[in-house]
Length: 113
Length: 113
Image (cartoon, rainbow over all chains, first blue to last red):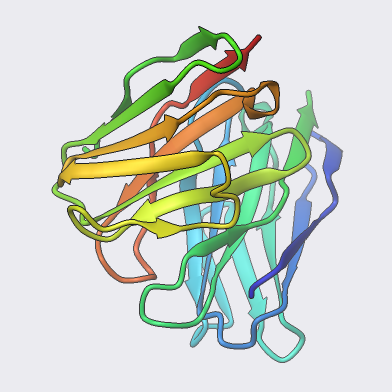
């Protein structure tokens, strides 16, 4: 089955710097890669996703890149702000018509003002 | 706006008790999921359901069962609660198909004494 590794587990940056979180997956049939943000005490919420037929996707300060050959995908946050502080989860959807999401273990991002 | 609600935010139970966690969504989603969230382990899938009265085991189903008698409601049952089931439980729902956004409930923090 699918296995998703996420690094780093914690990340601390200065406000205004960029942050990069990386994930690798094992199932070459995986075709959907969402990223969720979970603020302290709140529910995870989708912030961006990418499908396997696309190499990069951007939404304002957030971008995700996918390298299918290497089986890794990354979240990039530019011009970080204190409100970006949260736990970020990557996920990969396994193959099959109803493949489930397999989540990484999470990255706790702290943005220092 | 998608609403996924869970019956309790906090719950304290004793070892051996039968515990019911309820999840309700109001978006007519076919898919519903129960996850367990533990520090350093990310989100792990317990059970999921693609339709009324259908259920499938996730990655960690042992000690749990589920019920889906109505489309909008998905219940997680701990037949005999144990201390190692102390955790945060998150429910999610989505439209059918594997590439659809999962919407999470607020979570139930369960403490088993």
